[in-house]
Length: 401
Image 1 (spheres, rainbow, N blue to C red):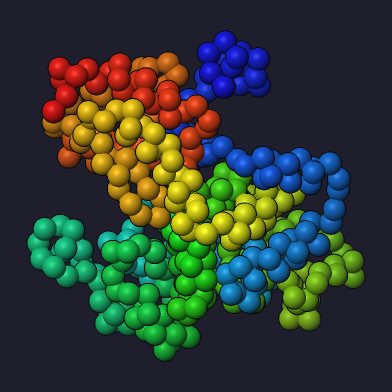
Image 2: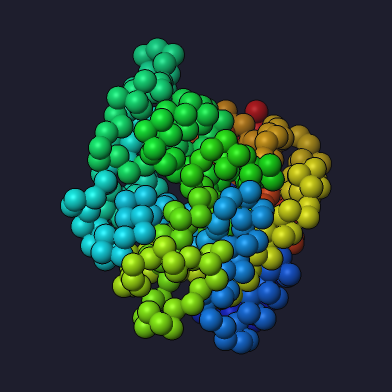
């Protein structure tokens, strides 16, 4: 909804411009447009009150079934899941240790991580009180050679203070997950997998648990199509149980605490932990309902159907602008690649799109190579036509390659 009509919407009343999000499910751009079934589920959930432990237990059962994990937890995002996973690996089921975090003195607090996989999101692990121990040299990325981290380097870094090994899922990630799992498990060290943006394909929902990962974090608001502030943590029963205990509101008497054992087995606890370091990671009832609805929709739709749905607006843009150098890039989420003459030309077009009305955000991650990308998964109805109009306006034929 653009133009004069936007003034009649919530955003119009707030004076907040509505944008065209062709970048993808970036949090800074508010993620995507939720399917009506997802928003309806959120509204229905918010119309009544429930005991959140009961709701979380029901969500855990669905997440476990979808991922093949022993247990699952709905969180406020993949970064929240990483913080909770780290806290679980450090504190286990010790309420006193949970109460001390992020003060991790006396606990296993080292997370072995691969230098080439470091990114801004591993701040979530440090936020739990962990210390990251880097291994490997990314020669293949530095242009200095072909090697990356290897399993023997992980082995050498694991010691008495190691709480977990972190592996960031990516087609280029080295060493392979199977080697990481085998190395860590020889020392009874759990493996945390950051798979935030790895969906689709749907097979990846189960792939990391099947490969032996102990905890896996997924975003709910990216390829899954759920609320932007939602995420999944799945894995071994007791580790997910620890994560849940450090997130839930536990202002209860011990005798009144009666969770379903399939979610939290009270018999394994010496007492009830205090509200923990994960309280900021909570997902509300509406977000959980939206996440579960999105998860069911994701599983009901085949990868081929999903790709065709996403590719339709890209095909429309290519057909309308057949004289532009637009190339379809296939993958989990297909994209349109705009190849310009050089970085300066790409930057000029990028800035013109930001100055357009409505503002159009595209992916400029490869701007230095003269490329921009259009992602389809966050486009609203009518956005493809708006992109066509903007490109036709700001990429005049006389300046096209």
